[in-house]
Each structure stands twice: as C-alpha cells, then as structure tokens.
Image (cartoon, rainbow over all chains, first blue to last red; front, side, top):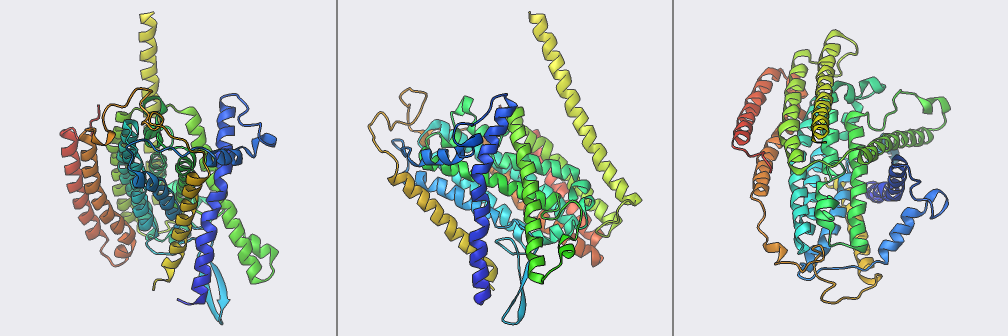
Length: 403
Length: 124
C-alpha cells in the first residue's frame, strides 16, 4: 500500500456513496410526481417551481420533528437499528461499478483504478453477505420498539427478505455461469459489444426472477407487507419519528438505487451503452480526456438504466395491489425457487453442451437455447394472465348472481 | 494486501459518521416533551396490553429461519461452483462437475419436497 492507493481509496470511498445520497431527494420527488400523475392529481407543486424543493422541505421538517421513544423500548437497540440499516445500505453500494477502469501514471508506473468503491474479485459474495446483515437493522427496529405492530412487521420483513434472498442467489448463479467470475468488471466485460450481448437476452427468466426478488428485498410494493399500513400501521418503523424515520426512508431509496444498479450490471450491460460507439476516438485529444469522457459516458448509461428501472418500480407501486402474506411466501418458496433451480440446471446444461462463451450470435444453438427460455417465459405470462382473467370472470359471475 | 479494503473502510467510516450526525440531529434539534401517556407504544389508541417483547409469535418464523440457513449454505456452494464452472470445463472436468452438482441439487430438491409435503411452506 502506497500513497496512490491511499489517495484513490479515500476519494473512491467518499465520492461514490455521495451519488445515491444526492439522488435520494430526486427519486422521492419523481416518485411522488409520477404517482400523482397516475392518480390524476398534480403531485407536489407548492414548494418551489414544479415542487422541486419539496424533498428538501420534507428533510428540514423531519430534522425539526420530535424524536419519540416509546416507554419500555430498548434505548440502545432502538437507536442502533436505523444506523445499522443505513450503514449496511452504503456498504452494499460498494460493489457497483460506475464506469470503466481508469489508468494513471504514478511514480513512472501505470496504475489502474476501478470506478467502484470495492475492487475485489469476490465482489458479489461481499454484496450478498452485506445484504444479509441489513436484515438485522429491520428486525432490531421491530423488536426493540416494544410495540406489537413493529414486532410483527420486523418478523414478517425478515422472513420475507431471507426467503427472497435464496432466489436472488440462485438467479445470480446463472449469470455467474455465463460470466465465469464474481468480479463485477468481468461480468460487465462478458456483455461487451452492443445490447444483443446483454445477459437479459440469454437469461430472460433469471432477469425476471432477479427483478422480482430485488423488489421483495427492498420491501417495495407489491411486496411491502412489512409496512402494510392497513394492517400493521407502519410495520417495523411504527415507533420511529423524525430523523430516525428519515434514515429508514433514505436507506430504502438508496437500496432501490443499488439494486437497480446491480440488475443493470448483471443483465443490462452495466455501464456500457446499447451500441458500442467509440465516441472518445472521434473527439480524440490526450489520453486523460479520452478516459474522462469514457468514464462520464459510462456513468451516464448506468444512471440512465437505473432511472428506467426506478421508474418501472414506481409504476408498479402505483398500479399493483399488495399481496397477501401467504401468497407472498408461497410465491417465493413454491414458484420462484423452483423456477430458479430449473433455470440454473438449464443454464449449466446449455453451457456444458454448447461450450464456449461468449456464444456466437445467431447460430443454431444460440437461437435454440434462447428461444426455449423465451417460450417458457411467454407460456408462464400467458398462464398467469389467463388464470387471473378466469378468476375475475368467476368472481364477477358470483357477485352478479348475488345481486 | 489490504489495499482493496481501504476504500471500503473509508465508506464504512463515512456512513457511520453520517448516521451519527443524523442521530445527533434527531436528539438535539427536535422539539422534546414527554409524558407518561404520550410515550405509550401505539396500539390504535387503546392502552397496550402486556409487553411486546414477551409476545409469543408463530413458530413458522423459526421454521423459515431454519430453512433459510439450510438453503443459504447450499447457495454458497452453488455460487462458487457456478463461478468456477467455465474454468473447470476448460480443464475437461465439465461433465463430472455438472453431474456432481446435479446430485447435490437432487439432494436439495429431495429435502425441498419433504419440507413441502410436511407443510413447511403453508402460511395461514
């Protein structure tokens, strides 16, 4: 370890957590605006033009709110829980690569620096382990509040998160088979050369399962059972107010950002654009300019993909009703676990039979293996839609007869 | 050797400082007034009955925790196998490793079916 490592580590460790931290108010504003539009109302529009300062005003309000602690609560754990949640959320961020690696000349030697906080070849294992630790924050918050709703919310939340974490890991394994490494940079590199090489085309089922599992992990609708207002009044954060509540809130939005970034890295080519354009070569100039330009383009594409996914999550929140708890658990254990296992075996078998990676595009084995997955996916989708349609028809007939 | 971990240490310290600042703000900036009724835990306006930490909750949560432990241990093995699969194929061990994992997943599935038939995934 020398001066170069020290400087770059400090810069990386401080700069990258600031990206989602500054984006939290933006995401909150967009969420409220979009949900407003879906429900045909203007959304926040009083504080500043178009309501842009609304999130800042909310933050200021939350700072000056009273910090309540119910009688009989365990003071230390009640204070520790939001801190633990937000710290682990920042640690999960550390595996996200925000752009291509940079290289600098230092002391006459070329050194490379990754654009992620943690440049570790076991990055995704680190991510999974930190995700497991983040469950402690929620269960401690639920248990230390001395409130039955909080306790139930915390228990439900932890049961839900552990159930979906297994699906998360199993679908992750499919991507690892294709990429052959735990390193996020290797995974992004395996998807080089335009959007046809992105893993979403080869692993549509894994993408779908991972997306559902990550929504359940971040406790977003339609999986927000832990916070179901109508039955648990607020779940694990019922007894939190002011800044401590804001910490849970911030952690939720940062983890949305991190999960969306991870989906981008695993399935959507990470920081690469949909078409490999050598923009920096067209502009030319010295090497540092090229590098800076590439880094900015990478950051732009990653943020664009994250923004698209966050929009989709907000859309889902505005559209879908909440699941019942038994439906949630049986979806996780009975449906998604099976599909993830079958997909894993299928991916490994295809890899074994057709060997080399990256598989050449538009050959018979490539189209064959991909079309099987897409047919399965469409059959599943059609089955779900038909089932829902039949159920609603039967329900309508019954209610009509009752009238 | 520890150079890659230095940046994560910086992030850890940064987030701990941030969390402490927020907690201190919550403690010192906010308005505070307390009385015995106000500090009661929320229970829809009724007086809370008993201590929440002594509530007996469903044994299903323990079951889920146990199942998670078992499956998560196996997941770690599957993840390592998946990451090494291509390299093992290059060494000519592909078929052997593949069938070994099929045997392992078969044992896993047997346990899974057993749990399912014993009603381990039923919530009501």
